[in-house]
Amino acid sequence: MEAQSKKDMRRTTGVQSQTETVSINNSLTKASLTLSTESGRRGGELRWHISNDGKSKGERSLDFDRDVLGVEVKDKRIKLKAFEVLQKESLFFGKGEKERVRKDYVFEMETEEKATLWGRTISECIESLGRPKELFVIVNPFGGKRCGPKIFEKEVKPLLEAAGINFKMQETRYGMHAKEIAYSLDLSKYDGIACVSGDGVVVEVVNGLLKREDWKQAITMPLGIIPGGTGNGMAKSLLHSVREEYSASNATFAIVRGCKCPLDVASVVQGDKSLLRIFGLRKYDGKIQFVPALGYEEFGEPIGESNKWKGETVILQDAFGNSGGSEMHGYKGSSTEFEESKWRFINGPFVTVWIQNVPWASKDIMPAPQAKFSDGCLDLVIVKDCPKTVLLSLLLSIRDGSHVYSPFVTYLKVKALKLEPGQRVGDPTMGGIVDMDGELIARGDDAIHHDPNWMDYGTPFLMKVDEGLATLFCPN
Ligand SMILES: Nc1ncnc2c1ncn2[C@@H]1O[C@H](COP(=O)(O)OP(=O)(O)OP(=O)(O)O)[C@@H](O)[C@H]1O
Picture 1 (cartoon, rainbow, N blue to C red):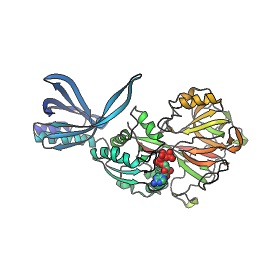
Picture 2 (cartoon, rainbow, N blue to C red):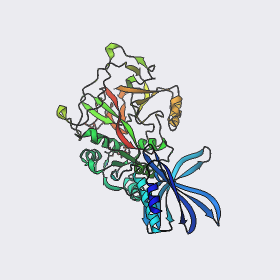
Picture 3 (tube, rainbow, N blue to C red):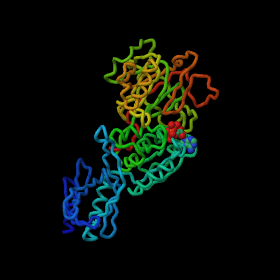
Picture 4 (cartoon, rainbow, N blue to C red):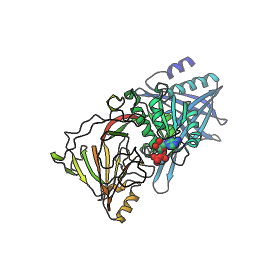
């Protein structure tokens, strides 16, 4: 009989179910273990009756993919380590974002053999989901409110342990350390790199991977983002897309589950300097030239032949910021040429220009509601010069993305973009500030301290996108 059950459970297509008597909290009930195979992916759930004083109180179930971190068997007992959804009810809007809670369910089977068999079956089912087994975790102790190490200890580590994921954790010791780590890490030992940080450290990791000789392979390493900084637009964008509550533990669970999605990588070129960035040029005054994406060809004005953008030679810096010249290895930026494309332009004055690849710039600012992780486009959001009262309401509406309906906002998708920084709006003697992922990269005023790493404010920037070059762990 047991051999037969085992054989049934191991069939690889369709749906199989088996029911057993189990004891939960000293009360006997029936539980069904169901396995299914859909498009080669195995799924499964455990479902059981709840009763009180002999009266049925309905059913409960745990889906191994969506709700369970791991399983443990001891003697006749099976422990399912769950991280299950509690649907929060919002007073005004019905169902709110999904909140998860950590809970263990212990099922006592009739015999040790039955517990071993079900435990093994559940464990095999979870293993077939393609979850990571070994993770490298980078923690920025100086990100945001400097809570990275605490977030790791309290929220990340317990979930990784419950899921049986081995990890090596390293705190960054100085700026750009994450880039160095990604540059030299033995990637063959890991199934992913998780960052407990803001978006800045994730960008460093992408840049570090792209500087490697083996960058083509290295950039396929899945990256996980657990919010621990001030600018956590990526984590917010990922969780919000599936209505999951924005939290470090939900972001960790997305990594545990092992679903992946592609991520566009934007390269930014300025003469012989170059930066690779995922998204996020936040403030800019001046002129914009662009190659519109399909469906956005009517935006702006056409550029005459004589003013056409000619492109620039891409010479990247090496992993640690030194210009390497032609002998340098690593990724050389997007190779798509736009010289023959139909460039268009929009001139200022602008109040703000946002260039995003993800909808959220931080946990409560959504400048680009239409942005997609991997559509090969940059979302360009231009706030034109407008009265101060309008600007104030725009700044408020940017929290839910409704600013895009304002007549003072132009929103379009572009394939390539050239920025020519101009003077600050309202003060022709001052230049603006170019800020990327919250990091100052160029400024046009007479700053007392001029950082040698800043780009030249007067020289145009060219941005291009490499569609789906990197890979992210995502919640679904
Ligand atoms: N130990 C450290 N000491 C100083 N700087 C560090 C350290 N570790 C990382 N950094 C730098 O901190 C910067 C910001 O990191 P991160 O994105 O994690 O946090 P953040 O709070 O969102 O920051 P920001 O809002 O400034 O982008 C990165 O540029 C990184 O190089």
